[in-house]
Length: 382
Ligand SMILES: Cc1cc2nc3c(=O)[nH]c(=O)nc-3n(C[C@H](O)[C@H](O)[C@H](O)COP(=O)(O)OP(=O)(O)OC[C@H]3O[C@@H](n4cnc5c(N)ncnc54)[C@H](O)[C@@H]3O)c2cc1C
Image 1 (cartoon, rainbow, N blue to C red):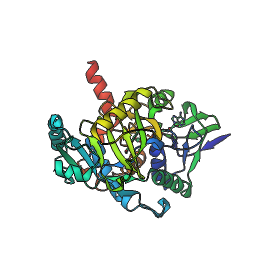
Image 2 (cartoon, helix red, strand yellow):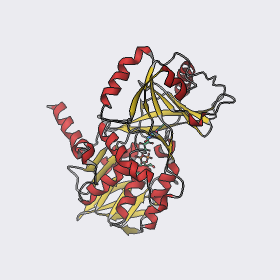
Image 3 (cartoon, rainbow, N blue to C red):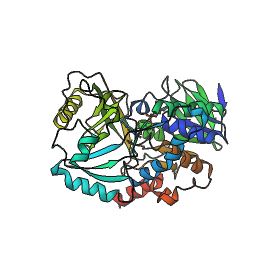
Image 4 (spheres, protein in one colour):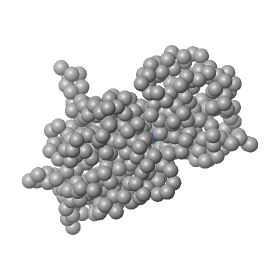
């Protein structure tokens, strides 16, 4: 069976779902997903934090650009807010004050960050051991994201706009004939002039199937655990607490605590699983910093955060392969930035002007273009 579309998006995580939704207003769009349910890989495994202070400059612009969508999404995203106020505290011990100062300087344009002292820290993050952190940066506007509502809102909206999602359908091979991609999948052949690569950890592998050079993306495993809050504590109003050198974080999660050792272990693309050693490191770091005795891990998972060398996303047409568009390398920020990044990607796919307000934030398309990675490689080689 052969089906024809204007655009094929490969991967139904948050990247694929969001860009497909944005494109479906003007084009016949299909999303091809190899798993039986969208979101099985990294999208379903995040910590669900929205922080305009987190990530490299292009991500911070795209995350800020996303706020308007999060706060006023189309009806298809449901009645419940996509963001819930949380606050993020970047906490520093006295031997980490240089890191705190570096973070403060790096974020100097970000008006919503403020320095806090030990007294504030005790109120914002009451579980931190007294005296552990001496100073911090606090982002009051940081929020929890309802990732499921966001992701499924995009998929629902895509279908309402006439788009399709085909699951259980890995793309095995591709060839381009007369300006059209012909993709072989487990469920038949799909044809379209444009392919969007939203394959997450598999993005470089997919690129090779379409004859493109890799972008040098590296999937890195990160582990998360859920533990009980101390008896009698109500963590709902506590800030998420991130070690300023990103050695761990702790976030209240529906009455429990989500904790992570903030590991970044390079991995081949796979169904990532937590390692015993990372779980042990996580518990050790959390118990050193917080007054918590981890007796039982209630839930535990790992996921792959996929990075380009400079940690900025890869968004744009491949410079050498016609009709092949990259939307990959979202790293640890792919949920918070999804509305802004997908609107940008949809404009670039269709050759439209950039979304209103994005350049005013200091955003430059060149900083996310696949071309920048090729230039870097050329500089290194010469
Ligand atoms: C522990 C952890 C915490 C995180 N916390 C946050 C956070 O707080 N805030 C935030 O913004 N981000 C966070 N992230 C990062 C965020 O989850 C990712 O940036 C985002 O989910 C990436 O989405 P994606 O769609 O690119 O990838 P994925 O969700 O992995 O989707 C890619 C899809 O492509 C499919 N695919 C691959 N190859 C093929 C093929 N050949 N054919 C068909 N389908 C294919 C895969 O099956 C997969 O479903 C976190 C990640 C982890 C692991």
